Image 1 (spheres, rainbow, N blue to C red):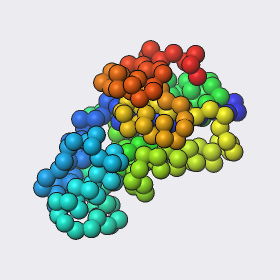
Image 2: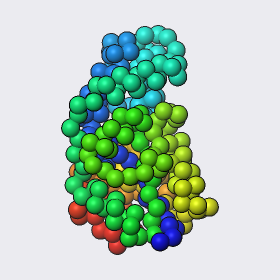
Image 3: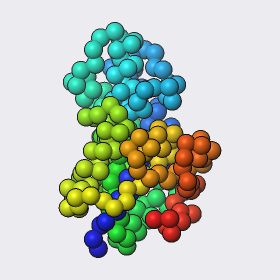
Length: 218
């Protein structure tokens, strides 16, 4: 089936019930590369991505520049911290994803603020079936907008589409809806934690999980 439209999936909190695993692993990985104090007031960061927050904390606490080599060391420590993690999908996530891939004219891609290797491990542990060529993470970008744009570009190449007629971002956090607004794309909220905040920021549709997702909005 020809893919004319696109769904952009966030991962942590959207496809995966993984936020506690992610945050604990993230903090411990920062400790492993020398950061003693980690500012966990996540919503007050300029960019909510692993690479940016790691850089901000390292440069503030250690008072040295955060190199790409150190970012790779941080990612390796992060992966080691979560290597034994147990992660489950948000209810109905994989079934919904396979339905979209096989039965609709929507392409899919994945844009996460997580580091790449931890993101892949979490998806694997939760049994999410996806193509790694459609996943973009924060290794090469500090901003969510850059990550989403890079994921969309990957989808255009993968599906041989010059321009998608409709692009919808699915996410659970206020940073997800803000990113969609900044990029001028549609947004659908997922999860129960931030429903009112997402609606206040313009989310017209919101579903607690994928078992109750109304596909008629697509």
